[in-house]
Amino acid sequence: MTLTPGSPAIVQTIAEQSPSTLIKDELVRQGFQLIVSYPDHRMAFLQRELQQEPSWRYLPIAREEEGIGICAGAFCGGMKALLIMPNSGFLTCCNAINGIALLCGIPVLMLVSWRGSLGEKRHFMMGMGKVTPPVMDALGMDHFVLEKPEQLGLLGEAYDHAVAARKPVAVLIMREMLRGRGGAMEE
Image (cartoon, rainbow, N blue to C red; front, side):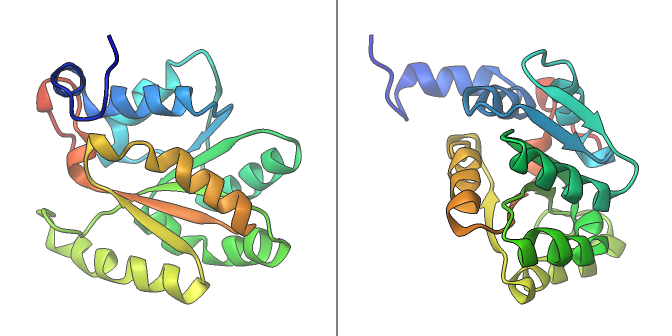
């Protein structure tokens, strides 16, 4: 049986799995070898899923800037890497993004939780959510939004785009994609 996007079997499979599991499965399918991750409460379900996957090295970091250098070095060493962080972390590491990835033309793919976007419950996150895309634009970074499971191929496409453009690329992930099993959300 051939499964096509939107077929009942695919829709049922997607509905039965948590978004975190679907993201992990897509990253495995795309051949990522290194996942560099800054702890983030909103992404806790996803980070637990990724940490348990044996097909890559999972590296927790203490500062987001470290992740830029590690992922840049991984690319130079022939590894396919992904940096995971909240948008507050993205905003703190603009100097590393510019000084390492942009100026040197090294692709770094970032999966960034978009706090302060639509559906945010905490008012103090909203200003940060508002400025995240304009800061990416000011840096000259391409960025894409991951809103639903049917868009998971975007992760591989964004990595390929970063490599072709020789620059960092961000995928902003919406809160609905960060639910755990049974639809639970860590806020």
